[in-house]
Image (cartoon, rainbow, N blue to C red; front, side, top):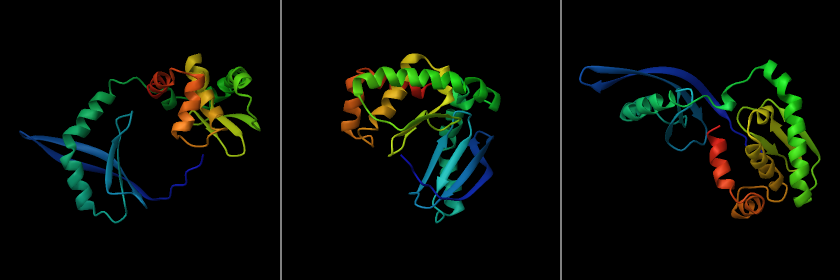
Length: 199
């Protein structure tokens, strides 16, 4: 599945917010101007960074007003993120990729063989990549790709990712029909999905 996104402008800004009682908070945030964005959204990432996404039409004064109105929430979210251990997706170097690439490939091929014995699906190729934004992907022509970081996960989570992508060979979206197929292989897929988000 492929999503095309046109980013018009990305810039980093610092904004001082009066938190009351002579307290002043400095909130650094990255502003992403994205065509097609609806309104303004604020997200705090795992590393504590703040990202504001807005349409090019939204005035800076309105963006500052929203950041100021959500200041306490932003600060609270950043403090919580400091307690969250790093995600598997947040770590890794070129050396790690070289070290785990073939380990991940062997692992993935083994689990594909296991699950495909039940599903009986056709796929064209399997590749291992250094992907940070997703665990796996499936193209419309049956090409499967997975991040090498699967080698760092428990097998039950690897199974979830493999089954997820295999099921896309049948249903190329996340409709109820897709999740029903995933559930036929992994009745506890909801729990596994949640665990993967925390990994």
